[in-house]
Every structure is written in structure tokens, then in C-alpha cells.
Length: 186
Length: 203
Image 1 (tube, each protein chain N blue to C red):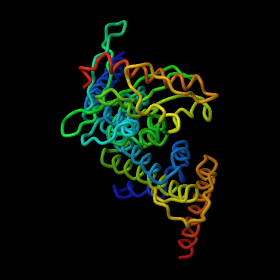
Image 2 (cartoon, rainbow over the protein chains, first blue to last red):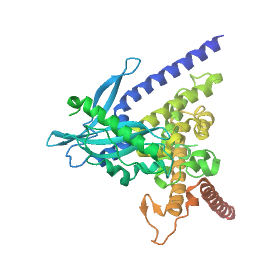
Image 3 (cartoon, chains in turn cyan, blue):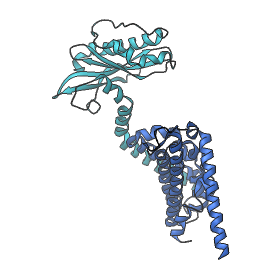
Image 4 (cartoon, helix red, strand yellow):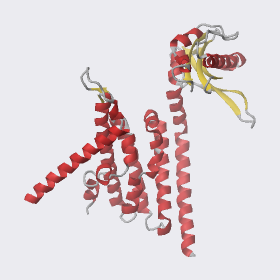
């Protein structure tokens, strides 16, 4: 009997000390991990759609509340501002649209005057060689310079209609955020 | 054995992938380049050193019946620490090593050293043992990774070194390539040992 109690106590203590140590390490690495994830996953797209800034859009990112989910938790949108001499002249933000193989994430650069600067695909699971063509410059550059206050339509890629429409609806979603939350974003 | 012997035995006599032929899964999977192999080796060394140290410190406190469970908890904690720190500061390496970082928990080198060595020896000897075996593992993975990188992508530590018309053979970057290189290195090490033993016998 005494052996069993000793086993339980020892295992409990080891488990509790490990748990405590891990929660401390988790808290300590939380901020750097978030930064690294954004830096390596989003930064290439942010750099593609924004030009001519003198700040670090990743470090200057801000979060705005765009609504609540069904459990009352706030849904946040991350905005990457491009600044020159301290003034924001453009932002990058991500929109999602339904493509052929799931959601397509698109980073969208928008200038303060309401022009589409450029788009970059951040994530997709479209068919390689067919739907994946939406990531090519020949398609993404069609979005350059469009006005943001009307519906976004460009010529789709033949054979990849669903994927092209997915990108368009992702861009439309991102622009919808810009129009709705314009004050918070700029 | 002295502390120095405990340390140096991991570098040649019992170097894990070649002599003990343990820990082959990460050895074959993560050595597509010298730096990847070294990253995996260092992560494993960190876990090995600290799990050895703590298992040894707690060896009188842990009842025999629950020792394996206790070792696993200790090892798993250090693996999660490695995973979080790597994700926070070495994100690209973390992406490449991926699933093989959490899998360090079930790496038989680590549990093997905890069970066979650290649970019976004092902390200092266990520390030396963990450091020696860990460095041996790291060097093995680094050498294996460098050879595969050189032949498979024509670079060494990400710097192109081969002549311009060199056609890299992609086979080396695939798991069978890892087996071939491992086999050749193993044979070479056995040959050296044999020659040494013969010399020793002739004296």
C-alpha cells in the first residue's frame, strides 16, 4: 500500500513540476512565435503588395475587431500598414475566398486613395498546374490599379474558373473590410 | 570509468547511428543537408543532456515500478521546450524538421540512456554521457547530411561548391540515398576499427 501511495505522489509531483515549467516556457515564447509565424508566412506576400515604405509593416501590424463569433469571442483582422515619414499611405490585409479545393488566402494591398496596389496568394490548396496558376504574376497583375469602391471582376484563367473566382471573392472580402472599417484601418 | 571516458565513448565506441544503430528514423529523414542534420542533432543533444541530468538527480526518488513513465514525462517536457524555443527563434529550421522534433520523445537513444545509464549513475557521469552521446549523434548527422547535400544538391552548408556542369543526383536526397551513405560510412568505420585492432594485436 505504501508503495502505491509513493508512486502516485512521485508521478504527480513530476507531472505538476513539468506542467508548471512548460507553461512558463509557453508564456515566454508566445510573442516571438507569433512574430516568427507572421514573418515567415505572411511577410513575402506583404512585401510583394506594398512598395515604397520606410517602416517595418510586420512589426507595426495592428489588430482591429471586425465582429464576434457565435461564442462572443472577437474576430480580429491583422492590418500591415506601409508608412512613409510616419504617415500611413497604404495597408496590406488578408481576405479569404472559396476556391476549387478550399479557401484561398489572398494578401491585398490597398492605397489610402482607394486603389488596389497588388495582390499575393498566401495559402491555397488548388489543383497543381491548373488552379495553382492564380498565383502567377500574369493573373495577379490584372488586379493592379483597380478602384476599390466597386465590384472586383477580372478575366479568369480558362480552365481554372473556380480558382479565379475564389481569388476575386477573397479580394472582394478584403476590400469590404477596408470600406467598412476605413477609419480604424488608416 | 572516468568522466572523460564517459564523454569520449559517445564520440567513437558507441556513437549512436553507427555503433548502436539506434535513432535511425531521424538520422535518415532529416539529413538532407549538413545544417538540417546538425539542427536535429543539437535538439536531440539538448534533450538528452537534460533528461540524463534530471533522471540521475531523481533516481533515488523515483520508485522502480513507475520509472519508465517518469522518464517519459521528463523527456517529453524537454522536447516541448526545444519545440517552442525552436519555433520562436529558428522558425525555418523548425519548418524543415517538422514532425521529427516532437518525435524526439520516442527516440530510443534518449530513453535508452535514461534507463541504461542515468538511472544508475551519478549526475556528473550522466551529464558527461549525455553530452558525449549527443555530440556523437550530432557529428554523425552532420557528416551524413554534408555528404548527401554535396552529392544531392551540389552545395555544402548552402554554398555551391561543385563545378558548373555537375549534375546533382536527387537520389541522394531521398531516403534510399540516406541508407546507402549510412551503409558506406558504417563499413568505413568498421574497417578503421579492424585496422586499429590488428595494429594493437601486433604490438
